[in-house]
Length: 215
Image 1 (cartoon, helix red, strand yellow):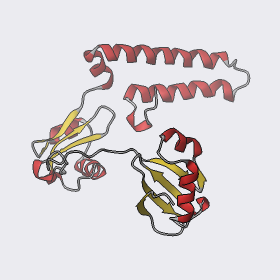
Image 2 (cartoon, rainbow, N blue to C red):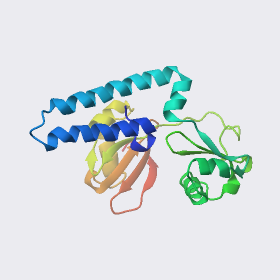
Image 3 (cartoon, rainbow, N blue to C red):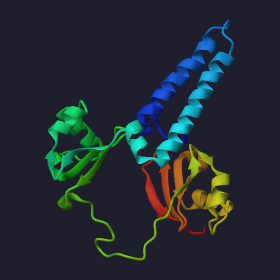
């Protein structure tokens, strides 16, 4: 099933997971039952899942039959009560899901859709949409992915080397000791981006942001 989390499984995948675990437990719990009796059904479920997934990827109709369809529960700012009843949801369920999505009032929502995996997708009203750099016509910036190089007081040497930074691990360690006045064991988390922006969260003092400078 790949690396999908439990909350992202489709209904038939969740059912297969439960059945497979039950089948695997039977020969493990009873030594008189050959383990092959558990392996064969689990392998059969694996083949069925593989087959269903391939068919679903090719056929929209089969995918809709297998997984269902997304349901619009808020349309143009109006709560679709009939759709909620079809999903066996009440208003409290909807408001709770909206809060989890970051919207504490239905008045801020233009569309809300219950996806086939049960999660809520929200499109806010224009007035409540977050402002982006594109809206402000700001260009030229880049988004850097920070990498954790110290976790729980341990220096992640392999992670640091794979980043291909313009500084060496020894220079970074020296920066931590001299510029930050910290030792590696004092740091809960330290991340670095490609442009050498540093985030540091020590164990005993507040977190801070800084920029690497050679000592």
